[in-house]
Picture 1 (cartoon, helix red, strand yellow):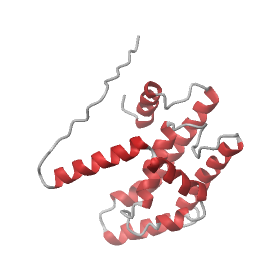
Picture 2 (cartoon, rainbow, N blue to C red):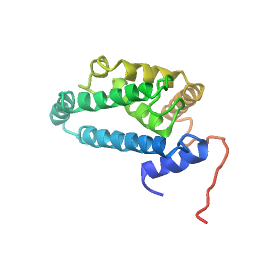
Picture 3 (tube, rainbow, N blue to C red):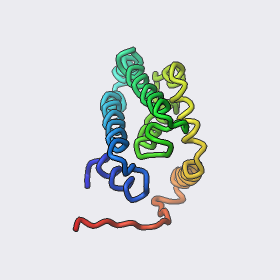
Length: 177
């Protein structure tokens, strides 16, 4: 399986992170596709090698019809989930889904400071639910554990103490039949 969202749906189904309820599934799917749209909008600036062109592309992303537009849409999705009676700060229902994790990866990248000329704090300031969402995901034990282990692995790699890493875990296989 080669498409990222198809992989996420499969893994999410196995891990209980893709809802059984068909309405919630379609809401998750909508979010996955919306994050892809935002990624495609950002990608040219990430791939650009020329510093001046990269800066121009990144500054354009800060314009109202680019990243602010998308973040406002995601803010509204969080608000809609609240209005449905779900108060845990996630996008769909009261538990973490693959949509939450995919969006988290993108918003963490935007807020990281690693994207020159992208002011993540300015982008998130009018979106209090997104800011809270990032804090909620950051506070999850599994996320904290992953970040700690990943940081350690990065350090080992940079110090040339390791070139590959193995993550112990439970293997899960599906069947087409």
